Length: 77
Image 1 (spheres, rainbow, N blue to C red):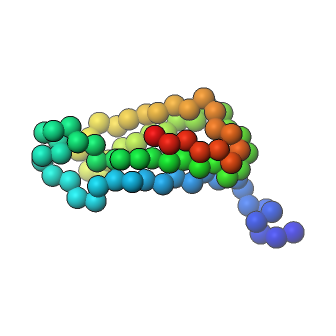
Image 2 (image 1 turned 120 degrees about the horizontal axis):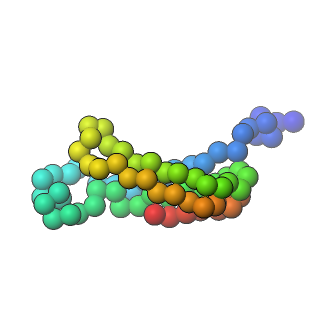
């Protein structure tokens, strides 16, 4: 058996975001986070909660709920 066979199923999260933000972004409601991609490379999952926060807390925290994510499935936000 290889190490991969024993590895627990995981989720991979990828972000596309602006690396530099300024006051004009906030004044013009320009999103800093452009894309959030969740890739499931394991078993199917149910009732997922994705919580997005910033540090320091310059934006309101957001929660996104997914009813399910199939094995090897992707969800783009």
